[in-house]
Amino acid sequence: MKRLVTLGWILMTTAGAVLAADNKVAPDLATHPGTSVDVIVQFKAPPTDRHHQAVFNRGGKLKADLSGIIRGAAYSLPSEAVADLARDPDVAYITPDRPVKGLLNDTAAAVNAAVAWSQYGLDGSGVGVAVIDSGISTHQDLKSANSGPSRIVWNQSFVGGDAGDYYGHGGHVAGIIGGNGSSSTGSKYTMTFKGIAPNVNLINLRVLDQNGNGKDSDVIYAINTAIALKNTFNIRVINLSFGRPVYESYTQDPLCQAVEAAWKAGIVVVVAAGNEGRNNSAGTYGYATIAAPGNDPYVITVGAMKTMGTPGRTDDLIASYSSKGPTLIDHIVKPDLVAPGNHVASLLMSTATLDNTYPQNMIQKNYYETNNGKADAKDYFMLSGTSMAAPAVSGASALLLQRNPSLTPDQVKAVLMKTAYKTFPPYSVAWDPSTGMIYFSQYDIFTVGAGYLDIAAALANTDALPPGVGSALSPQAVIRNINGVPTVCVANTSFTAVWGSKSVWDSTAVWGSSVFVNGNTAVWGSTAVWGSTAVWGSTAVWGSTAVWGSTAVWGSTAVWGSTAAWGSSSSDTAERIPIAISGEN
Image (cartoon, rainbow, N blue to C red; front, side):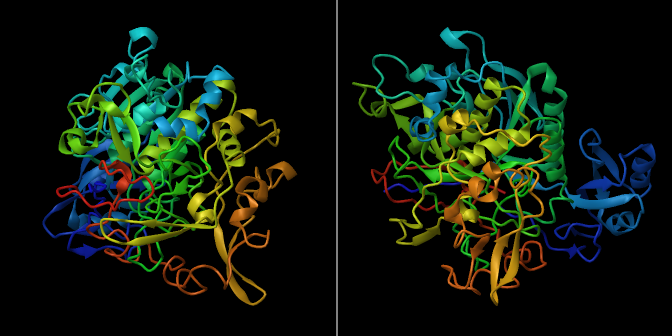
């Protein structure tokens, strides 16, 4: 039996002096005397020549001015100068220029996309979606109808070279968002692989190299570019199917500040939750493993469901690897939604690393075409993880915005969460046949969020949004003493602007009663599955340390399964275990 193969999400820590003692220096910024470090410096005001000169005076070099989107810049700086620079009163926060990693037949059916196509005549036409990923290569399914011009209307690389997909991740994501299925449409095909918004325009911003590696500053540059091109290409959605560990509050993280800037510029930002749901290295059973920038309360953070190989959703189950909330440090309730992200068929980039390294994940032609034996297809490939779930929500957002261009990002988020399918079993068990391991999933607010993406319900929704909606921030989880029992609850203070202002938009309507206990705001009490101390102890999820130390949650071999590739096992009920691919960092 072949196994699921995923890309390792490696925490890039090095030996050396950790400068966490200074509250203006990120806890993971490590230095070696006599060496230089790549950093992002956020200032209290947009940087000017004077701010740059302060860095130059300490031996630093400017690598990228990021002031168009955050109040900061990327520099190369001598290790010895970091502490001194942090004492500059103009400096707000210093972080490493951190590495990021990249996290449909049944997909479209499970989220009721066909209703948008047939009943409403929606296909994403005129809407631009920025795919910030490993690039997108030319593919027949990304052209306009009848082999017209490419719908990739802008190509730009931030990692050198051209913007083609030499990794295989970005093209797969693009296909889920907007593939038109032309390479699998016709009388000889038994199945069509069609994206959610099959005529959407794609803005290709490449930030990951051929091995899936990238860094914060390139992503920030790409987000700034998407904002600058917003009016030119009607960019209304950004898809981020990658992430990295959380090191500080979202209010300090430069990557989170960048996604907030895009959101406030009128662009819906959709982010993969991460694939650490099986990670129990900190004793949390995978809770509190949401990746950055999915920890930001503005964005739509998406977890992964398994379609179980059927088009209907009533048998669908959560993927046990899907990362769970609350977020580290800020304890934001995440994910916001779940969507199909397991064993997903999408576009094959024929020159890409993933496709050539894992030929077992090629889709054989007899899977969707008659009388072709077992020859591998040249157009489609299977991957799995929350990176595949996020673009389903991006495509759904494009459909909503095509129908009603006046919707704000907060209104799109509100509608998708309110109308999400909320009928789940109380728990499910996944068995990995290759290892014999069993994984237990509880269907709570930190696992499935507001529910399962339902495009038909979102389009049919007629509930008036509260006037003057300011934000649809994801709420914060807190520990409260209820009847003498320490209980995890959802705070009401940060999200009343949308969720609590009208009865049809109260918290129960948005998140559903099944994710609460006894119909109130309590999520967990002393009778919870994990008990009152196992998961929710004072030092695991709720402690003050950022990532439970440098090797706790993410470690050196942690799995980021957003680019997981599936084997060809005939089992459609068991999950297969992810393993780290050697050489990824």
